[in-house]
Each structure stands twice: as C-alpha cells, then as structure tokens.
Amino acid sequence: MKSLEEKKYWIWFSLIEKLGCIQKRKLLEIYTTPEEIYNLGEKELLKVGNIGKATIKSIMSSKKQELIQKHINYMKKNEIDIINVEDEEYPNSLKEIYDFPISLYVKGNSSILSEKNLSIIGCRECTDYGKSATKYFAYNLSKCGLNIVSGLARGIDSYAHWGCIFAQRESKEACKTIAVVGNGLDILYPRENYVLANEIIKNGGAIISEYPCGVKPDKMNFPARNRIISGISNGVLVVEAKEKSGTLITVDFALEQGRDVFVIPGNINSVNSVGTNGLIKYGAKMVTCFQEILNNEM
Image (cartoon, rainbow, N blue to C red; front, side):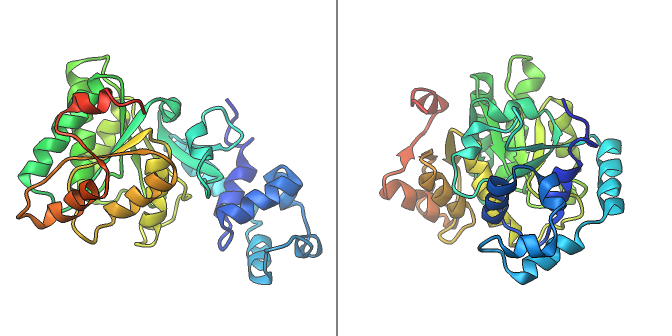
C-alpha cells in the first residue's frame, strides 16, 4: 500500500475548488497523473477544452506544498487514507456511474467497499415503525452476507448502521457497515452520532467521503453524496420517505445506475409513507421480510 506522501498529488487534486469530477477525468485522460497536471503552466492548461479561466486560476492558486503537507500530517494522525480510481481498493461498481468521484477519503476498512453492499435509506424524522423495520432489516441482512451502507444522518440512517453493529456484537460472521458522508472526515456531522461513528470503525466498518478534510457539511453536498451511497451498493432499500424527500434523490440515482430498489410499505395515514408507497405504485419492489431481498439476484 502506498504511503500518503506517495499519494500527495492525489490529495492536491482533491483540494482544487471549481474543478468537477468530469473535468478531472478529462485532465487525467490527457496527462495521466495528478503530478503531471500539477507541473503544468497556465498556458498549457488554457489549451485544454472545457476548463475556463476561473478554474485554471483555482488550479494555479492551489499549488501550495505547505497546505498539502498539512493535510498529510492530519490524515496520518487521524488514520485517514485516500484511494483513487487507479487503486485496487476503489470499488468497481462506483466506476460504473456517470460522475464517479476521482478519489475517496476513507477512515476504517477500505476493503469492504468492493464487497456485496446494500444501502438502507429513509427520512430523518422517522417513526417507531421505521426505526424497528430498519433495525430488523439491517440486523438480519448483515448476518446473511450484506454490508449495510447509509449516510450517518439521524433517523433511518443511524438505525441502519446500528442494526448492523448489533448483529456484529452477536456474531463475528456478520458483515460491516459503511457510512458515506457529505463533508470532510475531520468533521463529524451530526455531532450526536459521535458514538455511532466510533462503533462503525471499531467493528471493522468504514466512513468515506469524496470531500477533503476541511469541507463543511454544506446542504449542497448531500445530494451529490447520495450518488455514492447507491453507487457502491448492489441495491437500495427505502424504509420511510415523505412526498418530497432527499431519500428520493438517492432512489433516482439508483435507478439511473441500474440498481435494484426495494421498498418497505408504510402506514397510509403517515406523511412518512407517502414517498415509499408512491415508489411501490410506480414499480419498486415491495418487501416485508429480509428473505425477499436475499432471494432477489442483485
């Protein structure tokens, strides 16, 4: 495994503001490595199509070795790694999506990212029904060979992670849980999930992000984060979702990516079930027990 010093130009590449995944991919197709891009001058960058002057200015102003070293030192101290699209640990399933992240920051076990994963998602203001259903599915599916992926948010996400951890406490054979976050790994959001985050790492799971350390949990990051949740998963299970819910953004990504979408039916009188019951109407796979997911070829 390469040291962080050997990955320093990948770290630099991730720090460039105003440079999106598609533009990064285009640059790598031409120049192969971030180090080559780092060594380019402004005139050379101007010759590359689809990269404006503002972006070039951002690239040039980001070339600060002290800043890169500061990130390396912090990552070493806090056991944070970075993997890129060329690394074996980078999940092949994620490369299949349109705007896959060029690199991922990882705290914990990166090897599980390429295993068989199921994401469990839903609303933050969940009901007791949603809470119990989430823990039931996460607990049993993790015991049956599926890593559980979610977003470390309060509500359904938290119970999905906890359900998997409860299974691990009972059986060493239980699979792990992966949290995909919308901020740098130096920030824990929400703070109330401090114990949960530690338990994920302690039990062999992983917390991942496409954002470098220092990036705050801006609300615009979370829709982008959702494409990774579905992208590293073989299927998506929706527990509770309101009519206009961020959960449905993940469902849209999953459908675009060709992932299976499973839905737990909800109370017709609950606002938390409008989105989920609507998905069932439009053809999502309704499930009422964990075996129905296992019997489906994902």
